[in-house]
Structure formats: structure tokens, C-alpha cells
Length: 386
Image 1 (cartoon, rainbow, N blue to C red):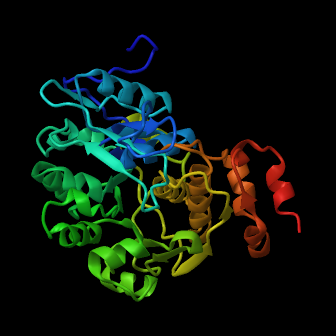
Image 2 (image 1 turned 30 degrees about the horizontal axis):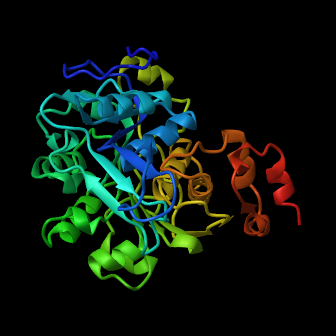
């Protein structure tokens, strides 16, 4: 344990066999956020934070009450210690995080401008990082497979050849694997050659739930025909979620008879968790496509919103909620991220989210959420009043 009482990652193998709702595998980095606006060349001081697509999902789900585990590697340095302590502070199981005495923890710097603007600058220092050394032979299989959902992203596959082979292994369709969630997360700068789009399509086809933006489907695969065209290119996943920016999101689910693999609602698997075995697969959520408009949000920063959306949708999946409600949960969790600075934001409480997700279409369209809305108490009921 650390001095603050958090679990300490070690380089030794740890017996991690208890079943959790979600395992998220991938790199997290220490982020440096400027204390004021301006070019990186001009910023005088930075504040330290954390960021990583997969660990973001784990942290948000843990904050929402789902047992979650993060699997990764960090350097045997202060930045690695900071990452492990911060992520454990969200309630995430970090026992499967390994220390690497020979490689550093990745870091990055970014400007105060929003990531969606042309003025935004990001400087990554992640080449040769500890996480890039993740491989089939050094990731504990039990820590990964004892999950109801395994969440991955295309970022991990781009870190190194070993990381790509690990991601291929985890997305291979084999009996007994957990439900695999895959966020495409196309980052052209991370791919050294033109193979990135092809590899991402291959990996997505092996997953059970896939998240992809319509913009990244166009950039990576040249698909311009909207969600239906993307589904045509990705018929294999049982559930495909196409994010359409501020417009909303469309989800496709396999028809009854082509059942979606996945976990039963949370709370029904406690006995199975105690024995270390995964529970049986549930019924599918109902056929798609289903479109759900995004919420009106007073945006503070877009950083981490995609990860929060995935966490919200997975939370609804773990609870066995209908497909439309899963989309609404994604929008609500994304709204929590959009209305706070930094990469991570606490989601609304389950009761708060359930009340908002249950309103009719008209009330949903009238909602407008701003900073602090997740702690607004009764403000949600007032916000939906005609």
C-alpha cells in the first residue's frame, strides 16, 4: 500500500481471479494542463492530471458503482506511482498493473484550447513507454478474462507490435472469452504507416460491442453514407454504436435469434464473482437501429467525452437496460465530461441518471445541462419542466 492507503503496483505476478464487471486494458499517461492560455512555447506552468482512454472508462464505471479493473504497465517512477494512486482512488482494482524498471511512464502536454479546435496543441512523450511493452506473454490472462466486459481501444494496438498482437489475441473470437467492447479511437499520428485503418477494421470485426464516430469512419475507412453504411462495413459485432457528434448516436443490435453475447444485469452475478467464474450470457437488448439525440450541453471541454459515453453505454449494458436507455446513459455520462475541464468527470448518481433517462422524448429534447449539473439535486426535475 502507498502512504495514502492506495494499492501499490508491483512487477511480480498477482493472483487476480475475482470477477469484476469491467476490465479495461490500455495505457494511461500523466497529463500536464496549462495554467493559462497560449502556445506550448509560451506557457509558463502546468497542472498535473491523468488521462487514458481505457483507464478513463474504468474510472467512470467504478464511480458509477461497477467493480472495475485496470490492466496496464507503468514505469518504476513517480509518474507511474501517481497514475496508480489516482486511478485506485476512483475505486478501480489496480492489482494487475505491472511496474517496468526499464521503461518510463508516458506523459503528454496540451494547450488550454479545446481539442476540437485547430489552435489546440498536444505534445506526446510516450514512445518506448512502459505500456508499449504490454504483450501476450506479460499480461496476466486471469486478470483480463475474469470480467463480464473487457474494454479495449484502437490506441493500444498502435503503441507497438507487441501491443497489436496482444489486442489481436484479446479480440479473437474464442469460446469462453468475456464480452469484448472496442472503441475504434482512430489516432492517425500513432500509426507509422498506412496499415492503421485496415488493422482497426480487423479488430472491430472481432469485438462484440463497437464504438465508432461517423467522422472517424469517414477518415479511416472512407465511409460517407451514415450509420447504415458503417453497419454495412461492420456486420460482425453484435452491437455497433455510431457516434454522430452533437447530433446524437445510433445503435444497431443483432435481431433476436442472433443473440448478443453479454453479461446479465448487475447484482445477479455475486455468487459467480465469489467462485471466480463468469455468469451465463443474457438475452439481446432488442433489434436496432435506434437513434437517440444528444443533449444540449454548455460545453467546457470535449476531452474525455467519448470515453465517458462508452462508460455510460456499458453501464446500461451491464444493467441489462434497453438499447435506447443505454444510449441515453452514454449521452448523460458524456454530458458530465463535457461540462468539466480535464479528462475525467464523476458521472451522475444512478438515481439521477435513471430519472433523466426515463423522461419522454419531448422532455429529453428540452434538457440543457451546464457545469455542476451532476450535483444539482432537484435541478433535473426543474430542467425538464415544459
